[in-house]
Length: 531
Image (cartoon, rainbow, N blue to C red):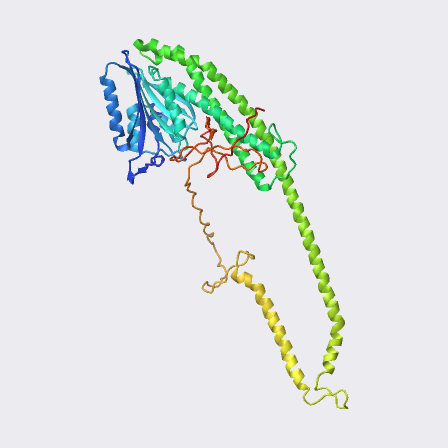
């Protein structure tokens, strides 16, 4: 185990120091400090903030005040640090590692942090036990010292988590602040928060499935009498939303597994209570664990219900996937038929043009001989009433007719030849991609020499895409149904944050851990119906 702890590390490029007010290291970091007392004094819970330069000093001062106060029986210190969409920690590595080592968290968790691992992990080292809980919302790591009953934690939240989500987590801690004598408080708080988040997330996905059913006309929310054609662009958007829903339903099942692991761990700790508390506080630790364990059956039933409901929603979205695919195929066939009709009409028009040109040619052949002879008889150089018909100046006719005819044919041939080469020389790659631009400065090609010839250099690599915007929790735009059809809206959250999650009529928080396209919104939902 010591070898694993020594090898674990987070590379330097996973840390991204923010700049605030034009100064690096001035980013604001919040932390929570709570204490319980042996006297009748009530537990206190305080939230404060600090920049990176002063953070370690302030945390050291808090620990010294706790250690010097004999009335304090247990304490909690939780530091909240943000992460961006690429899981980069928004703090310098030196400051983070200073806090991590001072908190005494198991170094092996650095490997889990490096790979953004989900799930529940824990381990012991002497009198200290460390926990790691990874979810789509955050990573929570903490250590608990049995002798001093100090809980010291680091919360790494994702950049698209709203202040409301983090606020609900802190409110749960504040409500249970008197239960700091065991390491199970943060695990129980994470379980409750995860269960509540899954309920709201599942309902949010349900609204998207209802929109798809209203669009296609199939399913519990489908309009059976709808016979209007659905444009191909709306079907394409619906197909994207189906993929969005399917991915996040799978994510829900993964978090059911995480929640079940936490619940099972809390339910089986009573038999090993001496591993988590010294003798004088064993009873206090057991009392707190019993209170947590009493809620496990209810939370486990909620997780089981969420799992069954997600499987049900997966079937509904699979059916919509089949329907949308069939509608897209039908729409493609309709478009192909329209193109075939247009091609037929074009061919008929071309045939009519050909018939017209044939008629013109026939009329020309009909009148051309007569026109020729009429013009010939009208030439003044020909005296048809005299015995000497051809006059001496008739050679002028041939002197002008012959060269003019040759000149006209030469101009026609030159224009025809030059016009056929024009796209090849001046527009390579557009209509004639097989031709190259003629470059007078380029040397003429030479015959290859015998022997080995190195292959041509590879094409230039496309530079990586740099994301310039944080993801949102809302799905892509779905313009479903007719203009008067009720749709679902999620009004925007409070301003001032990089990510603003949606809400349902101000009652339920939208899911925050969905990967969705940039610059999208969720349409408003209408009357609620339970299929």
